[in-house]
Amino acid sequence: MDRLNLPLSQLGLKLLAVALLVAALLWGAWITQQVTSSPEQRIVTVRLAETIGTFVEEAARADADPAVVQAASLAYLKAAESAVADMGHDGRVVLVAEAVLAGAAEDATSELEQRIADKLAGEKQP
Image 1 (cartoon, rainbow, N blue to C red):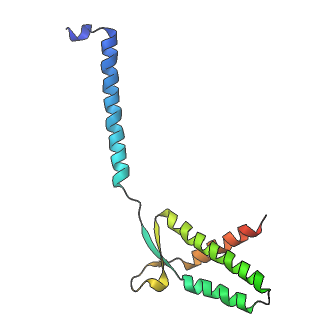
Image 2: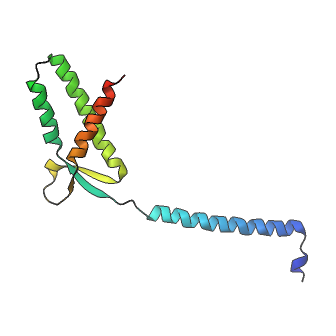
């Protein structure tokens, strides 16, 4: 019966110690789960040379000032680089299709083209 007659301060310290131990164990379990779980990765390909080649052909056919074509080309290349980087943020591995020798990876070229168009449209607005 000695244990039940502890002063209130000793009982409070023991309860605090137990609560801290439980919290540390729960945190340890959570951090272990976070470290050991990896996001699902998908491999996709984009036909980057074809996409850029199409833009270059259209720019060559346009009757525009060379400085305007150069500025548009630079903007397009920056948008393409940014779009490819954005595509890789959600756990996807983005490979250039021209560099892939074999395999059946998902083709995400249409998504790339849409992202480039969105970025170019966003730049033109003030």
